[in-house]
Amino acid sequence: MQSMIVAGLILLIAIALPFSIIAARKSTRGKGRVAGVALSIGLAFSILFDPRKQEVVERTGKSEKESEDRNKQGEV
Image (cartoon, rainbow, N blue to C red; front, side, top):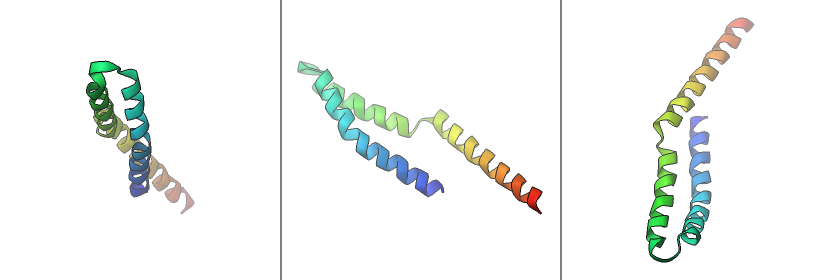
């Protein structure tokens, strides 16, 4: 399950990254083109390695596992 989530996130980022770079290049005219590209790449990586988001994903996984365990105990 986790491997599917990770694969989905990587695929989503791989698809979104070129579009975000193009958008950043269009929004920064003149001198700041490189800065816009660097900013968009940094934003993409900050989404990947956000500690709060990681914590929420871990909590959700734990709560789903606990609810599955409770359901299994109720069936027995």
